[in-house]
Structures are given as C-alpha cells and as structure tokens.
Image (cartoon, rainbow, N blue to C red; front, side, top):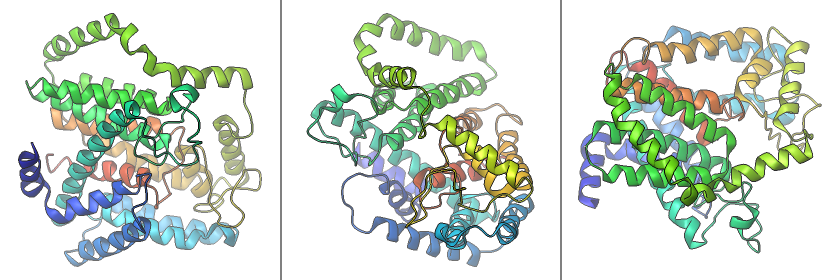
Length: 397
C-alpha cells in the first residue's frame, strides 16, 4: 500500500504540489509542528511568484473581484485593529495560488495536483482521527483533558486536529471522495474508508458539517452518471444496511444530539450564529454598497481588541457585510459559475465529485465565516475547490 501511495504521489501529484498541500493541511493539526503558519505563508508567497513567473493570463471575473476589494476597503476605511490591508495582502497570495484568477496551463495543472494532495491528506487525517477516538487520543485545543470527550460529547473531540470544527469539514470532504472511489471502483475496501470518515464526521459533532456532507452526497449520487438506475442499485442496499444496523452506530450521534438539546434548552445566546447573522445584516444595512471593510466587523460583534481576530459566523453574509452588494454579486457569480462548469454542463463522475464538494462547502459557509480568512485551511480549501471546478471545463481530475 505504501508503494502504491508513493507511486500515486510521484506520478499523479508531484513532489512540490504534494509538499504544498501537506503544509496547508498541517495547519489543522493539533500537536506542535513548529512555525507551521509562517512556513505556510512563505509557501504561498513562493508559489504565487512561481505561478506569475510562468505566465499571466487572468480570469476577468476574478480580476474584477480582487480589484474591487481594495477599492471598497479604501472607501470603508475600517479601524486599524483589524489590519485589513495586511490581511488582504495575504488573501491576494492565496487567491493567486488557488482561485481561477490565473488561468494559464501551469496554474491550472498546479491547482488540480494540489487538490489531489489535499484530498489525500484529508482522508488520512480523517481515518487517523477515527482510530484516535477509540484510543483516547484527542489533540483538540482548549479542551480539558481531565474530562472524557465521549461523555462531554458536544464538540469536544478533534482527533489529531486542533478543533472539532476543523475535523468536521475535513471528514465531510473525505466522505465525498471515498464515496466517489466506491462508485468508480469495485474494490470493497473503499467502503471501510467511507465508514471511518463518516465516524470521524459524527465524532466531531459538527452539525453544519454533517448537513453540508449530506447535501454533497446527494449531489454526488444524482449527478454521478446519467445511468441513474446503476447508481441507485449501488447505493440503496447500503442505505438499507445502515438503517438496519443503526443500533450499532447510533452512539456516534450522541454529540450531535447533545448539541441540539443544548441549543433547545439555552436558546439563542450572544455567541450563537443566529445573532451573528443579524449583526452581519445590520452591517450591510449601514453600508450596503461598499461594505464595512475586508476582515472587519462592527462594534456590535465580539472581536479580539488586541489582535483584531474575528469570527463572522457565516461566509455568505460576511462577503455581503464586508464588501457590500457589489462584492457579494461578484462572489456569487464566481461561485455559481463553478457549478455551471461542472454539474450543469456535463454529467460525469469527475464533475459530480467537484460539484458535490462545491455543494458541501457552499452549505458549510452558511454557518462558518472563513471565506476571507487567508490564514485558515478552510479558506484555502474553498478557493481551491472553486478554482478547480472553474477549470474543469478544459481539464479533468
């Protein structure tokens, strides 16, 4: 297996794209890996320079979007505590490396190779975390190790990642990829990977990740092939078996159930997403055209007054509140164009996989505000998927 993995990396990904992907995924790991953030920023800068050096051919929609943001930022002029300009500079580097902004052959090839590497790493993180749950290993930060995460249940398990809210989407993406592998292969061992990834997804107890994954799976199954009967024959028996065996795996749902009970009993509090959504809408109403500024929030929301770190609580409304209606329209066009170039233009296994990942991150962004957080792995993942999906009309996975 190790030989096969090495052969796949060398022949299908390449050493540098794999290294780049590995470093970006390593940002999610909970144990100490040294100055991994600084290394990732250096890799983004180096990679951006290489991509630009290989040739510059821009996607006009992406160009308008990335040029509009600083104009809106100059007009809104948010407080300096948010370091909006430096954060935008880091976002530009990520945008060059991952988004459809640069559409040269080299850039497109690089994006697809990096995506393969990222998906491979995500599967490995998900599977390792699945076994960590039973071995009592939990690297989630801000977690009291004196308590048993299997008893605390509600989002206390991160596996080898630093946060359950990272393990959730990583496992969700892994579920989609492994399900794709099941559909394109007759090798039953891939079902074991699917089970392990679903286990990690449930153990993370992330409701947004679970819902987003279900939506992604529906897109994958519906658009995988125009031979719908073939897909149904593959999937329905598995669903029946899963229902029959529910008493055996229902324990993995305890975390999700606990979160729901907690929400019902405590109602909506200041930290809830619902209140953050209301704040984002208020910010938009106060500055509907150009927004309140890249990476900024209003005084109504909590933020770190020393570092300027924020948590918008939603990516879709963050784009709206930070860049205004013009920026939001541009982003929506970029995002849904990628759907057009995958599942809406052709029906194939590869387009279904990309479409399912787009659907998953799109739903997940309703409840997570990482779209402009260039230092976040999830921001990197979203823009990489958008970039590869947009490129799909001229390439294949």
